[in-house]
Image (cartoon, rainbow, N blue to C red; front, side, top):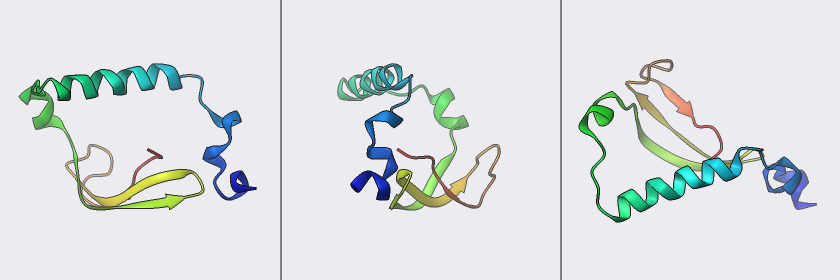
Length: 83
């Protein structure tokens, strides 16, 4: 039923690397909680997503906004992969 409209809710679609990705996310959250700074070298290379809005799609929650400084998308309007 609901998974027809939102296939990303189907447990069968859980990726094999979900556990690894969740651990990485948890580690990043812990670093932020401890107020550790992100290395300046990484921030200077990071692309930005500006003027973004959340959008619910059949593939999952995504963001639409303007990419700035992205190596492949350059500076234009983009939609992220599912969050």
